Length: 287
Length: 287
Image (cartoon, rainbow over the protein chains, first blue to last red):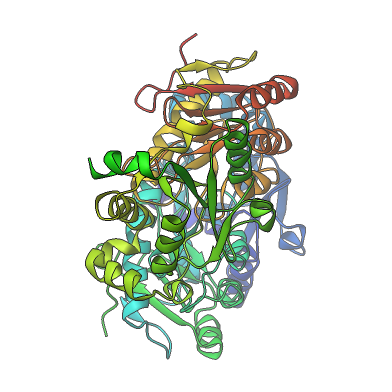
């Protein structure tokens, strides 16, 4: 309740910016909507072009006091995490005293991605009075319903690969390893860990079996805080899948951000790839 | 019993040769022991130098009739599978009628690595009268007991990474994905699927976090036929782990082939890496 009460006095949006193009897209969307914003950028993580021409702070992940002071000075009421933040080693974090106090409190949960980021989100809401919103609420294009998004449809073999991919992705997600897997003809070609989906697709290009191409399946980790690390796909993902010889992508209904959805669907259509949203409990895309 | 009865009349060893240097090592070991042998080599899989100067057949995986005729002509009584055979797509197999009959009988189990190779082993024993022996019985250097093999020991952080690696490797093995994982400071840097351990290590070199280096954990898949796909490490694995900035390797006690064990342990010692055998149910290496 404190967060909701505080919002009218601090209407700005604070963007906690990870790597890649997503923070920049969000900045553009906010500008188009006339919404005030500022950006917290992290050395070694955020792309420098992300913060051109916007109020921003360059800092490090451990500088909790500096970050909070900046957000308050910028009249921020809502926060959003945009773009992947690769987990740094503890020595890179160099916690200030507020961060150290926080680490001490959350203890060993800090050693899991989801534990750490989820704990930070809860602390920002409950203790600091910000409202943390999901990236899909700001950039989403509406809820993602199960079924095909574009022109192409998975055939029976691709549907079997999707089922196997969902089984494997859920299992590796439960172990807090990664979100994405590539399956071809029932064989798991690759599993994403910290290298990211683009690197996974790049290496699968060299691993493909002959015969019908495989599928990329990307799901959220079952226990993850979706406001923190929403599975994201876009045109780059479609291009990577096409280069790897895949026949399509399956993403999680409701739990996926498709960046520039119309363009991404058009890219899949043009490349001859299917793009389907699946319920992770029921992987058969509805016709 | 048929296999044991038949053995005296057909004393030769048939080596079903996959990729890499292991088949060549086995040929040398047999020659040193004066044992007659022949090699079945597969196009696109076996290294051509493997079959220099030995009786051999170049063939394809689906040519069951040709392979059996060759083994009988060579008076083979025992068979061993040496070196990784990457699973081909069904179109590459082009089964002859004996292979087709076999595929028809085992049905969808053929679509899992372990199911297919395990079924082939059982058929070779029960129906064809060969005795299939484990590679470790011929090349092993004795049973691998839990504990460190070389001079170096994992510290507490490395032991925690080994425990996490065992947990993850068992789970991905149970899903029939792969045998090896790399863990650093509790984070899974990479999971092996069909790319193999050397490729996994090569990409982890670019993914390492700063701070203390990670560990490679390599275990057999719980359900796998160990005579078919024994987890194997050697000097190349040690060199790859060193290049990736790892601090050591953990392999499965009893369930791992260490090629050229003395040289491999010496390489780990020289590189400053630990090499420990762990019980996959009890990952703490005994002191």
